Image 1 (tube, rainbow, N blue to C red):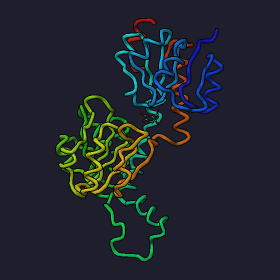
Image 2 (tube, protein in one colour):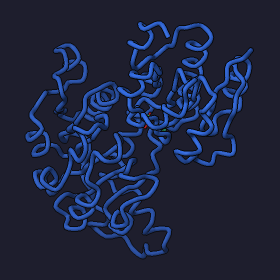
Image 3 (cartoon, rainbow, N blue to C red):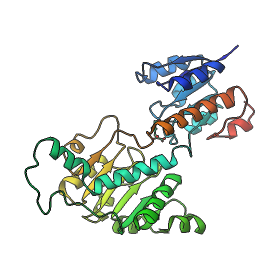
Image 4 (cartoon, helix red, strand yellow):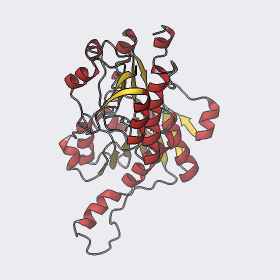
Length: 328
Ligand code: 8YV
């Protein structure tokens, strides 16, 4: 008898077909996000769940899903998982590291450059039919090459952005992280470790790539923004909630920083209304990992985790391997 799983959001049909070879699959190909109550109801008799960052897995949901053994997230971030609660109930969590690193670093750089060079603001101007003549300071932005790139959160994606900045654009790279990187990694990235305060005060372009946790909630708020240079740009490809979006919108409006590039938002897909009216911000809808090959690789890895664990007993990228040690 095939085990039952839920695929909580729409996914590539090829990946769904592969899962159907191994499991009895309930899928949400119509892609209506499930409420917490609908998710709990759907998971009542399931052993596995294919989730995305939008599905919250917490103690309340787990209590309603007694058969659940694994939640395979199609994301590297897993702040939608209450991992201690999952571990307490013997439920394995898996994520999709590595397969999205370079693609996401590419996008971090794309957003940095679009922000510095005012790409979307100038396109809106053009589309609105406002371009009448050339002028010497038209959409004059910030340089990227030869400036100082600051990175907050120096994991795999942060290192990818550092390499691009240092080797491709001759940027001086500084970073702050919970722990300092080994000297060899710092050398590869040409990155220098600094305090958070020095990072904020010195960076011309500050890129946020740290995971969301209660400790990183509003890591960038009014006080931190006040330390940044008035010419600096802030890029957030990490998670909504790391930046206090109201404080950021105020800083952008007052031009105490030059501009921001945002891919993630507090309470997304809703945005703080002020972010929609300030001109000096580039806004994208959480697409940093979204290339066809990378999203496919993420979906494949999430599927491989389900098959690996529920069929063969061996998940590829477990987040709480202590569950495996318990022999469940
Ligand atoms: C996903 C992400 O698109 O991997 C992550 O952590 O933020 C994105 O790549 C998103 O989480 C949907 O699952």
